[in-house]
Image 1: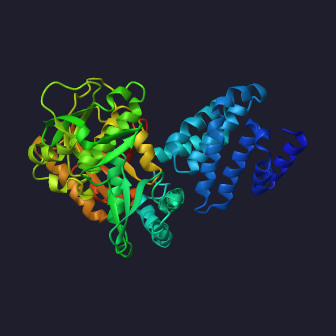
Image 2: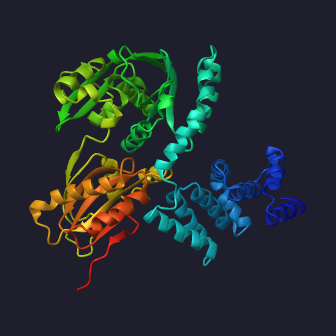
Image 3: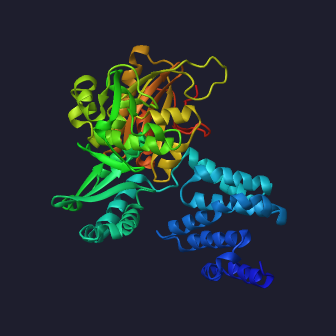
Length: 505
């Protein structure tokens, strides 16, 4: 970097003239951009975002990330030239994530930044903030508020979407449609997956959970709050609908539901194990297995409907050779479910309002260690959102990070069972759930199950507005027949937060 140019950039940075830095660097030819210049440009975007503090700042932080993350492969060489490069690069990445309300991804970058510059107070401060927010996510804007913002945004801009959908050359503006709709939904949903179209007199917005049960619950909540004025012109759906006679063309092949063999068996009360094989696609499995599997998922969604596929298919195997035994073609799978798996529930299997009503029981083996981690005492539980339980036990924060960046906070209350009659444990959990829900009011929390341990009871939930929920919980637990109570997110590596203290004496 030219020393005079570098000095000018630093003067602008000290004078908080960040836009001048951005304009100067972006005016350079692509071949002139190196690690240091791109990192400096990202810093300017981060600082400008902090300076403007408007809804547009999220785009600026994201721009900083888009600039910084590709530089990781060059970091080792940059450190050889500038010893402080490891600190500045990691700090700037963590900084952008932090102000995008993504403390989970931000924390490891700040920790690496501190390793590179031990004792740095600014870095330590942001580490402490991340850890505090991950344990008690009250800093972030709630999804309840974001939902209102999202629908306000969509309502204000949906006229342009309709105009684009009405164009005869709609394919020519498909990228503009996707970009504009993403921007309208952005106040509520980060990285939404959706389809746009028209059905009869109404336009359609189909929000896809992409196979993620936690996202399905989030989208069901979002859809439920669509403004009435919008629903006069739009059908808002969660999940792709079932389509008969569906076919697609990929890899130069035409594949339809009748081309796929299915071996199905009922599992439990209303689940299904499924094996799929397609002779047309079998030769491609070794070369393009991931893409071929995605075709099977698309076909399965069309055969059952996206939410029904998520609801019923507990185990799915994609076969390279056909299975022995009797099979059916995929176009007949819906009939199999309707008759053999869930005759009563099938008519509403794709209703997003039922997204959280299929519960799975599970068992655990209580830990025999003296110092066991939270929930390691569980011997029985039930949940309608197994990914959160599994993620917690496996110490995987993927679902937590994805939801929390939208202001959604999954967590659980826990309390001691000392003095509670074993026959009354489930009744107590039900009473706590009903009392907290009633005190919160509608739209604050969705309870997703609970568990019983040898020491503690657990009440699981997804909070759409954590502050309102915790305020209600404090009041309810104050009068509950338990010695103390606490709140914990579904993150293994954070601490709990007390809601009721044990009385001394």
